[in-house]
Image (cartoon, rainbow over all chains, first blue to last red; front, side, top):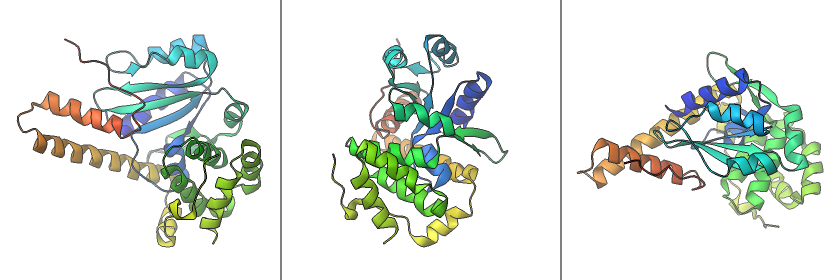
Length: 186
Length: 82
């Protein structure tokens, strides 16, 4: 199973199961901006104990491996992994635990994921940018900053900057946002 | 609060941005999926070169381990079964 096939399989599960979800992370920034290598597919999902059992049943061992922290992530909010051992691919499932994470699912964007026109729900460009600032602020790679600039340069004025500024102030990422904007709009 | 310097922010150049503006989300994702396939091919070749005595299963497992490590090391493959 390659990455495109895993994404398609994940979407089969999400759409047929009527899960409330949004593809996020680099797969979302790539849908709006610049392509790059990634080994992960990140998805924000609303899950409770019952819906998690339905989700888990779609990813049986040994074809897939779901890490042991999954039930805790579902109960309290957090992240768990679904690994495809035969290809080294990984899905990161983010269960919302904060106000910002929950509200992202209220304004997902439907966009095609393959040449056949298959549609998927993506976290909005603005919310993905905010999460990328969070990832950078938490000490992760500078690649998140490039993902942000890729979206800003590709979408240009279609990005709702006042919305990002509002959350950047609230979450104390304003210094990151200002630095990125200064780089994109010198 | 993690500081950020201008010099650490990479920006794609204007010509590439113009190219990406002409592409659909599906086309952008297809490029990324091709990159993933290419990275696997490169890892496969590297492992076979480094460990010429390994069989296909050993090579596959090492390639998968390296690919997962490249994703941030937040997941591990399940233990090999007997």
